[in-house]
Image (cartoon, rainbow, N blue to C red):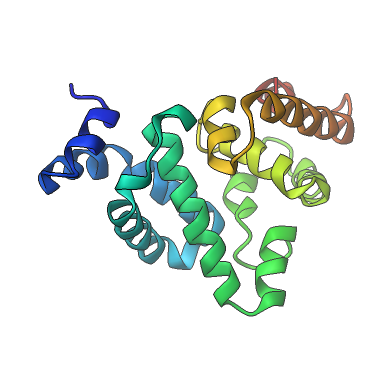
Length: 186
């Protein structure tokens, strides 16, 4: 199988080389959008692929793998989407208070319904970068190094911020939290 990096480089002269990247990463990127802006996920995914294709020459392998670069493009598309909405609505989504709250899907999977509001509140209280790192690692299954590339910070800084976010979440959940919740944060 040809690596993402080779395909992206080849797509500069052969547009069809970009197609396998779309096939490989669309599901994960769509999930990223669906958890953050459920009603607009399809449109945001299309916009992300358009921007990734147009900006494929800007990819820098020294900053991380193609997958992390694509999530960075997706993050920028989502931010532009939220900027285009009414400011209070976008802020409510980020704070976990709106009907398009990405945590509703997570709530259904939690064993203890009482923990969900506390998790939402705690996540909303985290600094934006720490929250984004935690969600990229937990929801999108990115490595801390890939998540660092997405948010544009050094990997070591991302690991320390991720540790801080996990510690805050564990402290808020307390000893009565189901084991799978604190285990996932390890």
